[in-house]
Image (cartoon, rainbow over the protein chains, first blue to last red):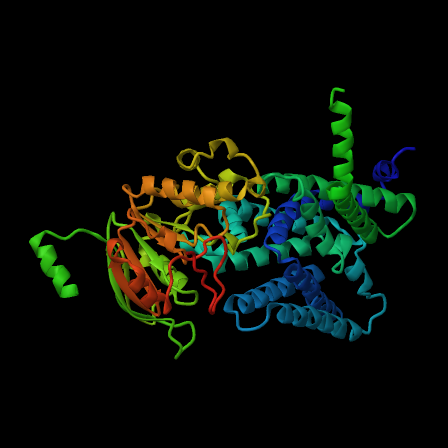
Length: 300
Length: 268
């Protein structure tokens, strides 16, 4: 069976699909790298709250464009500003240790979504829907978006290349990093801001609700077999690209919405690997196999 | 003390002090002091063991030396300067459980973290950093595991990797916080030998609730229980220990963390 994806890409009518695929592959490297930090630093929930807060910015940008007449209000920039704001807010509260971390995460998460829905529902013009932002829609990925993705992605990649060793130290052992003179609060906030940018980069493709899975699942899978962080980043990048391509292929083949298809491919892979790991680690099975092998090998 | 130091300086007889505490008070919460009136110094090249009951302020003292906490009043000096300025001369091994042991990182990358410095450092570690890391791993006899994942090491090997991380920037002062809390006795014995071999090259400060560490090669014992008392090791006897811990004591179990309260084990 030929690939529906390759066939569709060849058709001149499918410019959006080409954009989506290019954006996805560009973003894979970003997701693999930032996802590795997020998973090892155990800040998946903070990244989740940041992603959901982006909705506040999207809602306001749509409202500003259609109700206030701000023609330059772009939901993607709205998402970026709101996500960065959420990152700094959560980061500041966590660093000050003045409030329970999980409570702040939950509060920010809900506030961002509340603001987003509030503004979107105030847009009276027809045809404006928030659904495509929540669940992603590849029909929306324009050439302009592609440039935004490329520029934001390049900025984050440069930061990683410059400060990888500081990020590793902050993720592994904050106290030791501080003892060595690393400015831990600065790099922690920078890491949260990078997560915010990364999440926004693929929000069009997979949507706000599910983007967090694509950020963390490839890294979580690769952490099970990579020896170090660089290996984990490389494998996570490859896996992320693979999930995107397979997800898009399946969505075309069975006429399904692209975002959820991609996420389900990632999730099924993740849970399968967890399950395989569990089965392999079952001591009873190992024992049996070991005993049998022992019997076979013993020369009698 | 400053006056004495100045006069000593004038005489040209002063040796550099590795650590100086001048009337240091510290509390995490206002009004609740953890350490009060701390005053001691440790000369460069000399080593000491910090002992005392749990919650007595041993780890806090180390954090003050590292500059991770600032004294509420008084002054902490490391090699004559505020701790923040002397980080490159201090090696630190935190308590083993202060981070996730399953973290996906190679042994070499763990050791390289010890080459981080204050200020702007861009890009990845350089050749000389890697060479220093390999050298530090050689010192603790762990070069063959440089490319292994840290989580695959045994308890004793992990501990050696962390020592290598503390040694990789050639410190003049080595701080170890409860280094033997999670290892068995054989490993502990080897570990003590490794440290003893380093003692000539640098000042070593070991925090321990384990009085077995009070052995002759550590010149001083600092007893911390909110206040401090410095003793030469030779003068430590049952009576001193009774004063420190507030009860009669012969030895402390060293294979587990002592819970607070009346749980000190007597051997013999």
